Length: 347
Image (tube, rainbow, N blue to C red; front, side, top):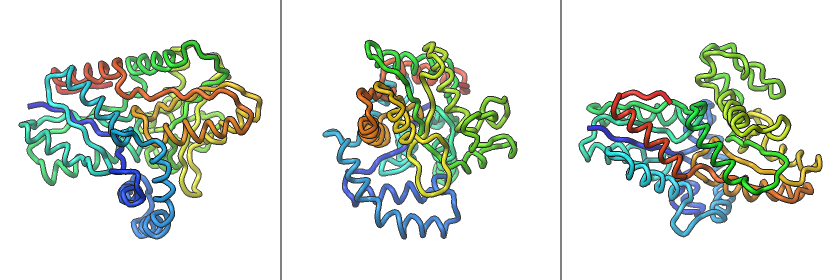
């Protein structure tokens, strides 16, 4: 029997320092998130970060927390329910971190008689800290607890034309009637070393080449796992679909941690620069996420807008993630139906 497991990032159980600390501990101790030796990672996370950051992060979560719970969880559940209405196979939801574990999601499907699972990481682009960590853990759990099941995963769909159409239509719909001078595509940031580690050619990707990005534009097998290339492709493809004029849109990366170089240009500094250059009206979209979360609702919609206004900007339009948009529900549902018929799917 076939079934589907949607997997998103996760969330603390509540916006309290205690629950946030527990969540951050699991998240930051993942070797694909902070990819340094275990002893050094433990010293950094448990010795420094978890003694300082939970209170600050809890305050941020409190700003965006809904009556129903964590926005990311609530929106993911709405997406799951929307898809379940359109497909004939069971659809479960899990999170990579937090109490809604992947193990629980797999168990839920197995308890319903499912032995053939379509695993859908809810990330358009591939990255070590998102897609890869989900797939690795799912396989570890399958081998250890569910050896009787088969798992097939949806490949990154960043350049799938149907996805680009859905994303572009969503952006256009939210900008309809709005006057803006620049559209910023802001993606979750990752350390530059993640790009080099994911380069299967071991010679193509040069993440520090932030100005010309020659490697991102030069065809290579490395692009299959290059987060930076895939982000820039989303920006390019949406720009073409919406007929955006050169110079009126750009790409940036947010949420850096520590002192190592991360993908650039940085979102906060880009917003600051645009304001200083005299830009008065800007819009921002976050296509690395399909569900609104702390990074989109607090870091972008609140902190980003504050920076823009401090630099003299007037209007700051935040475009929501796809969330449970009907067109996005239809898109994922169609991919599931195709998989159920053919057992394989290429986005």
